[in-house]
Image 1 (cartoon, rainbow over the protein chains, first blue to last red):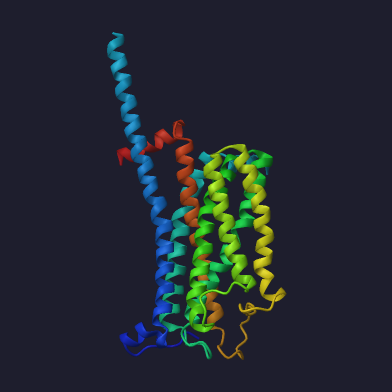
Image 2 (cartoon, chains in turn red, blue):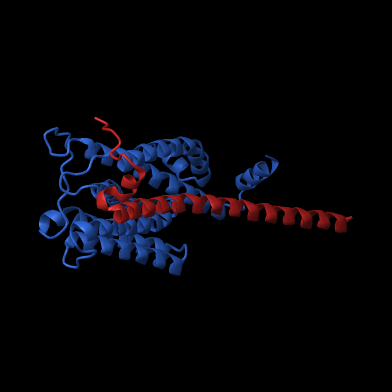
Amino acid sequence: MLGAIQFSSFAEFVDMGGYGFNVWSVYALFAIFVAVNLILPLRKKQKIFRQLRRRMALDAEIQSEDDRNGE
Amino acid sequence: MWVWFSKLGSPKWFYELSGKWLPWLIAAMVIFMTIGLVWGLLFLPPDYQQGFTSRILIVHVAVAGTSLAFFPLMFVAGTITLVWRMKLADMVAKNAAILGAWFSFITLATGSLWGSVMWGTWWEWTDSRLVSMLFQLFLLLGVISLRSALEDSDAAAKACALLSIVGCINVVIIKYSVEWWNTLHQVSSPVTMDVNSPNGPEFWIATLVMIVAVYLFLSVSLILSTRNEILERERKAQWVQNLVLKSQAS
């Protein structure tokens, strides 16, 4: 059922039977669409973790300062 | 059932469970995407009428079909939010609107790229399928801006649930537009493994692989953004702080 590769040269592959621009534009758009919607949330997660780490470090610092002042 | 339901509504529980599922979902997504794209770009024979533009359709059909899932999903999530006050459902609805707008836009863009060579036009205002899909994009953009205007209030959840009813009606219109009005956009080919069709079954199998890949991608992306939302809303909770501490250690 799985036929052979439809192209005998790389140039033919790029040309897509004369519809190269449209076919490749669609696949490029799709690739961007998938990549953006996976990478953006992953990067946002890292950012959230960074912010939380900073805030917790700050809280700990304030806490230790309060402890010292309390003595 | 109720214990399970209220557990599922707990952001912490969802965060932990989805964390276990994610690697498997991502692996399945990568496998299906790779098979679908390599098959689509290298092996799929040219259509007997359209030549290689048929390769556009396996992507277009998969994204377009999946884009119809967003409003029903948002309607269910909106109902759960309003009836059972489940914050998690509201987070899902919020992120689904953004991803759904992406899906609708890609559907229109890939369709245009196909139509420009096969129909000889990028856009046709008199075609009901095209216009109703554009309406879905605008409706989703409306939901997104409503949410950002009203923030995370009850009013936002109510307004968005209402808009998703309109969206669901529009989904039915999109689905049957090609049968109700006879315009440019062709009706969907029946899902058939009929070996006598001029193209053989490859197109449908390749399209099905892409549909599975796109649904997996939808799940992965939606879970990732919902998890971020949970982290932000629960940042003061002890379990989130423990997570941060653990990530620091490693």
